[in-house]
Length: 359
Image (tube, rainbow, N blue to C red):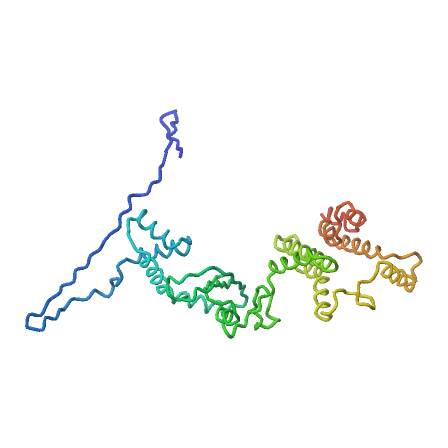
């Protein structure tokens, strides 16, 4: 740190060098002495005073309990690591059983707050849920069969709630979200969530992306379908990121993803078909068949020049360019590897120089 001090016409520079240090840590032991009397009248019974109500009945204060919970929960240390840290850093010697007992004491102390957080989750309008497994011992005595445990999580913009259960079944999901959950659930395709109505389900896009990639890594038609799904997903999120950074309006976003939504509706209406248009054998249309259909449509429309299928792509490109859509978005939409193939549409756009001289 530097400061300037003025001496007459001269200025002297002072440098300050600061060192941060931790003072020696030594535990504070508070001893309560309770008076005790023994009856000398013949019965020999003993009477001892009671601790005040504001005194913790355990052998450790609230700061020790909180520290053990912090090292165990937030910093994810094992019981032996917590035991070692308490001894080496704070000079407090505790057994492994005491570490677990203090954990339970901290858990019971915040039980009311946890219940309030869970109730908030169950009444939320939108909740994201997931679960993951881990090996759970029986130190606390609640898992005598040494079963695998599951960490359930429910997320909202304000509250994130975690819960450990020994099951991944439907009852676990209902216990997390509540039997009467009425919000929108964002989750993966795990069957434990199927009791929530489809109208209130949003599948997690991260899980869907993994599924689409798996499908694209297969062979044959599955590979083509998976690759198309991955491209549609990438386009969707590129557009969504533009909405988030303000370069694309929500109205334009809705219009651009209308095709994706239409494909989804077709998939719902015709779940047995892998194609939008298929042949009489339920296979994909051949390139020559598509070309013939487009050529015949041009003749029926009375156009005076030959029509081919690729003109549909050109027409889409020119349409998007005239609507003011940027070149990169058009490139991704049409699937061009080289942007030079896309520039031709923006070069002829009627809005290319619009707005340059509005003043």
